Image 1: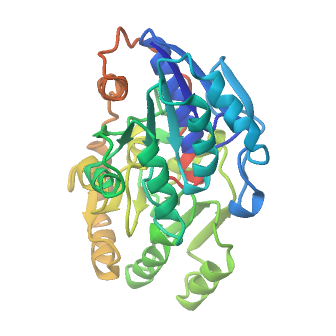
Image 2: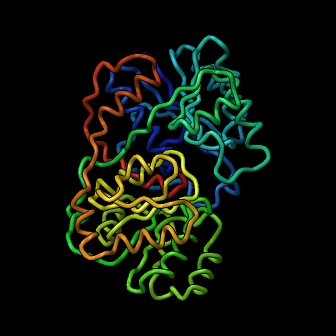
Length: 380
């Protein structure tokens, strides 16, 4: 099958770009002919208050990747669509409603003969604007099918379109083995919050729980701050946590990720809401337990009391209790011993079968070194 993926790729950073690239590698390894149509300029800078691109790839770029799309050139959207008419399948990687006008232009160029799938990382944003739903409705009703990563997202999609909606759990795009640095034993009494800092991810809940718990546990917060640092710094000072919270603002390069996990007892995911996320798998790849709220897929990915602890979302008391439970004598070591990296090859096989409607010919793929730095850029 000849398949085109339309979405961000290097030099764009983050989970969306990494997923698109890894999917291209996996599809090619399964016997398909694959190309990526990516961006020269994806959207205006004011729509994304962070670093959009990086200088060094965090995994192996896909060789057949073009960068012709430009948000300033609607004529180019249509031309790209026309160039994709001879493909057997066109997959649009949907990360934000901001992409919809360009995708509608591409779909107009493609016409009706080539099957198209909207691969939605999020059907609707966690923090919505009035135009999000109309834009997504227009896109999903125009595509021939929709692929989402959870049943909850499938419900949202079915509320916007009568097109077929399929569900496939999102596989990881992680390194084959964690760095030796990340496998040190011993309790460090330090927790990690990692990724793009946005309100739905609940950093404020974690800070309040940290202040309410034992006073000898520290926290590292590493990632880009979507709305700036001022509000978080004010809350840290208000709670008297200045000496216990270390802020590392900015995008975290893949080379720096192992050290962050090596210095931490657990990754904390205090999300208020979630769809699909790679962060649990990333932590487990580094041998680190996870403390997460019961949202999205976290309740399935984290085995409560085995390789992490699950608590209730947007609940300071529940998270405080989870932190105390984690730091009970011997618990960090016991939970760490229960962490097992997951073999994601079967999940990728299933994902590709769901996307293409055919069983993979083969999936024997060398590690591309793709690091889940993607959750520096938002994600779920």
